[in-house]
Length: 423
Image (cartoon, rainbow, N blue to C red; front, top):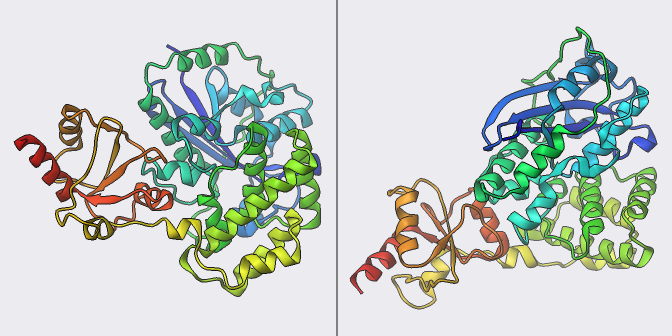
């Protein structure tokens, strides 16, 4: 048994420490080896420079009055990470900034190699095949609420719940123990602690309203390619969702592409696919505002998309892949059998969402007796989502609509189970 996990999330002033960007907020969640959340920590961090995209992270200069610098909390940070498996969503990003901050203090850190930290985004390729990259997209597959996105502790807590869902899906996977043993052996810098308290951000103000282009990045499909393509796409997600689309940001994005081993042809192909997926997602409800158009123009410039391609993408466009894939129980009932009978077999995978009249364990046991598998999450391999309400707004229901997976109310399932029992 190992010491558990330390799930960490950072808010930063920009994309890359090599351009002088700094950490401005840290959120940490301690998770037990079985996936249970134990305790949380958070603090804003005074970077000694401007705070970057305030409209995204909502941390302002007034929040930094009396806030610690990274040097003030580095010792406590080490104490809260040491001996635990460090986990993050897109761990390469967090590792890069943590290494830079410790290096700035003259200390070596174990984060020079991004593989030091366990990445829930990369694990999603295994536990959520076909899923997108963003934390919100992965969480929706398990009905994990992500509230107050772009707050370090909120994102760390959601990542911790996602990790717990992974562990629950494969509790006997020997890799959990292997990762725990490796964490115990990590060499941490000997940073002396201070009496400076950790200071949470001030709350109670207006919540930042996310643009539709920002929200669209939550639901982008996986990009074709290798691990480098995945990591590069995650950088694009962060740049687009943070509206960090200036000329200098384009330079940083190109540097990431080189770091991840993506040559010019591969990068151009990924840009085309990414932009097309983003436009589809923004167009999902059939409306494109002037603000959306202007932001897509900035994305097009960042990605080197031509004006002709931009105009073809955003003018006269109808909802494409995401919008066209929506299903509801009514569509299925109208397609033939008025009872909405379900054709399931041993190759089917069923997922449940909502408060059912019967307990989920009981329903899953009935399905298991018929040789039908159930899963706690929605992936592209899911056959049908059974919902207490076919119009559910749950994360699982959103994922099912995104993937074009039928959503059927529990009454239809109960009828099918009753018919199977009589047969």
